[in-house]
Image (cartoon, rainbow, N blue to C red; front, side):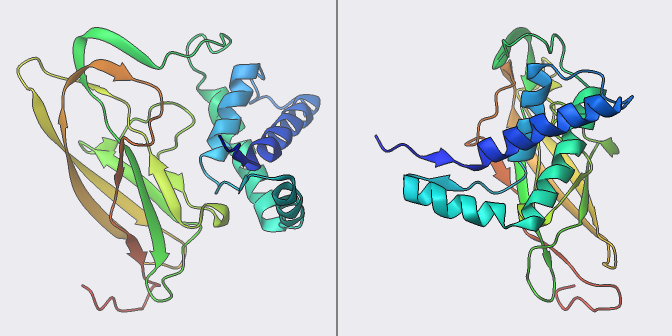
Length: 239
């Protein structure tokens, strides 16, 4: 079997651990814990928001390392996401977060609706280039949809390293015993400095389950239609 490796894992892990040590030395009041699980949560937070860099050989490692070392913007994005993730993890740690055992799912007599991971892209409506700096707020039943845990933000933001891609993981909701299926109506508000706001609506039909899923499953996802933002004063011909 070919050994495929994502070089970003070492790069992000090294940077996150270094930033944890620096923040500890500074005595930042917001850093409430720096245990292994909190660090792993932060590393996962960053890796979920930057593109991977896969290699299969020593030659590939050398080539990609040179590219990564010279990519100033990527380094800045990693640092920004690392600090952001550290603050989120510190503010909302998982129950028993110091335990290395993480449940992949919880079996319960109470049925729940498990949401897929929502994934989509934001583009400039004129250039069709990925748009960074866009903020997306996911709304359900008139309020911000609750995320799976602190490593997922709502609202979230797009960065240059994510190439306009965003993602949401909505926390499972308890299902009424009388309903086997239910349609959930979501609204997404999208803003960016200098651009007109866009409001997108979409519906997700779900069947209830007796498993509260916690482990991320990349195959259980929903791709949301592409979002195009137009600069203020520019007419959208598609409207």
